[in-house]
Length: 103
Image (cartoon, rainbow, N blue to C red; front, side, top):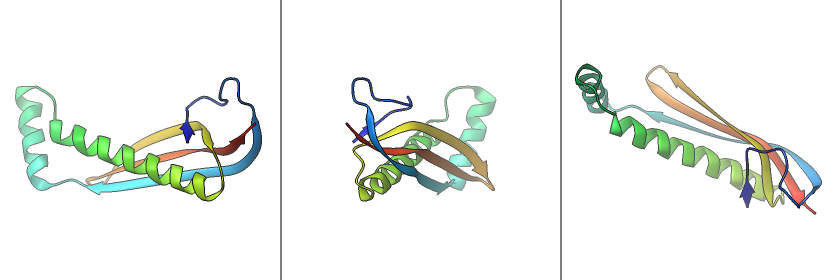
């Protein structure tokens, strides 16, 4: 499955547009991670625990989006957009794009 943020796949025109596909991941933040992130904010440095959770959420959202595209019979998702939000101490990542069959 080709997944791209561009609107086309170079050299492979879209034969069929199958619709918008999405994937979401919502992960709760652990209180210990919150405490250590607060300490890092004071002394400086990167919040590795948050970076790891963010990466995991992004991969989950993209995998869900790809699975939906596969169910539609797509071989690519174009125009992919990733959105990141924090809602009530929970991290939400959503991925969306257009499922297509390539020529």
